[in-house]
Image (spheres, rainbow, N blue to C red):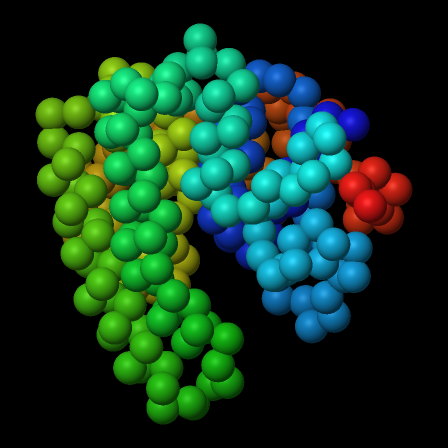
Length: 234
């Protein structure tokens, strides 16, 4: 079977891996995981023992976890696409540095707000958690806006897996009602709007929203967890 990306809803960071697969232009499939479901799938637990997304089921039926690793795997499948760079080059190091920042510092800044999102209405911890997230995320948005001054893309002269990953997590500030990016970070907002117009990003939104999606790559359709179960490594 072609690689299968397990992506999480609502609004998971796996969004960036969908975008990257579209940019790659090689055959792949998707499997949808409801991250808020109270009942956890035993089949998906075999794919990812932590029951997190994203996970990439590889051609040999083994699993690759964590966005950082998945995105680098996607980029390495065709370096001519320039979604990533050859290991050992300065460009590769710059990309790794940016991915590490996005995957740790920036992504984790929103963790308190996501925790607050899951609490019951009226819980006094909600305001504390949201304030903490806003403080941390504001520093990240400011850092990224400054980094993008005079640049078209996060790393190098073309869009890379770093841009794909950022578009999936930068939206969380508005999703969670913490920021108005157009007003608070206009430079970063312009960059994000450029990405929002990309066909792969439009496709990824439609996939998440379960609306008609037109692939700009080689998406071959969704598979169910039952379908996947027959292909898992023993």
